[in-house]
Image (tube, rainbow, N blue to C red; front, side, top):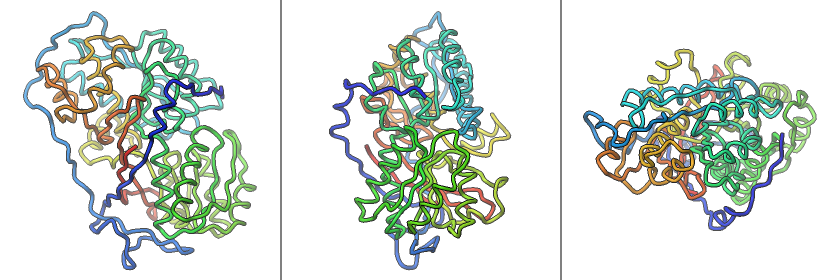
Length: 448
C-alpha cells in the first residue's frame, strides 16, 4: 500500500466537527428508548434495545411528467468509470455497488441522458491493497477520458489512487470510503463520497454496544486506514459512554492466521467483541465460537456484515449484530436492483453508488459541462437548499426549468460539506438470523 499524508488545506474543516446521533428504531414496532422488557439478545450482560417500526420515506419527488429537453447539448458525452471490487477481500461489495451504478446509468439514459447525450460507463476492478490492480485500472480509465470515477470501496485502496485521479482533474466519488482521513485530503476539491466518515459509524457502534449493556469491549482490527480509523472512533465513543476497551489486537491485510489475536481478546474477558475486518471474519468467527464466545457478544461493521449462509453452520451467528452506513434498502429499490442483477443477494452501498451516479449527472447538467473540475463545483449545490427531489428525471426537470434542487437519494439526505463529505446520514444496525443472513433491526440518524 502507498502511504500518503493528508495535506493541510482542508484541515480547518475538522476543527468544528461535532457529531449528533438520534436513535431511529425500525422493523417491528416499539420506541427508541430501551426498557427492561424490550430486548433482542442476552449474553454476558448484553441486552440490546428491541427493533421497532421502520420509518417511511419523508422525501418527495420534485417534479412529474415528461422530462424537458436539455437547454445545453454537449459535444462530449459524460463518461464515467467505476473502480469497484470484483476480486479481493471486499469482493462481496462489488455486485451491489456495480448494480447501483448500472441502475443509475439506466435511469439517467431512460430520461434522455445528460446534456442531450447518453451517459457512458466503463467498469474496472479495484482489487484490494494486496495487489496493484487499482492503479492499473485507474490508468486505463483515465486513458479513456472519464470525467469521474466511482470508487474505490476500500479506503486503503482509494489512498493508493486518489492523487492519481484528482491530479488528472477527474472526480473521485466513493460510495463506500469511510476513513476520516479523506475529509482533510488535499484533493483539489475533486474527492467526494456518499458514505459518511467513520466518525459517525464509530460513534454509533460505540454508543450502541454501551446501550446494550456492555461495560468492556475487545476489538480485533484490520491494520489499515479503514480498520484503525474506525476502531479509534468506536473506542472514543464507547469510553465516553463509560465503558472500557480491554483488548485491541491488530492484524495485517494478507494474514491468514488469527489465533493469537483471538486468544488475547478472549483472555481479557470482554462483555462484547467488535470485529473490524473485511472477509477475514470468515476465519475469525469460528475461532471465537470454538472458544465459547456467543454470537450475541459479536458486533460486526460494514467491512464484514455479509451473508455467511454458505460459510457457517446454521445458528453460528444468530444474534450477532453489524453496522452499515446508509438507510435500509427499500423493497422498491431492491426490485429495481434485481432487474439489473438477478443474482444480487447483498445491497450494501447500492444506494450510495446509485446516488453517486445521479449526483454527478445532475451536477453535470448544472455545470453545463462534462469537465470534472466544473462538475465538482456543482456537486454541493445540487445536494442542498433547493426543491426536494429523489431521482434524476424529477431533479433534471427542475434544473432545466431554472429551479434550484436538493437531491435526497436512496442512501439518505446526503447534503455535502465543503470537504465533499455527507453532513448527515443514517447508520443501519442489522441482526443475524439462524441462517447466518442479516436482517434490518434499527437505524440511527446522525449529523457531522
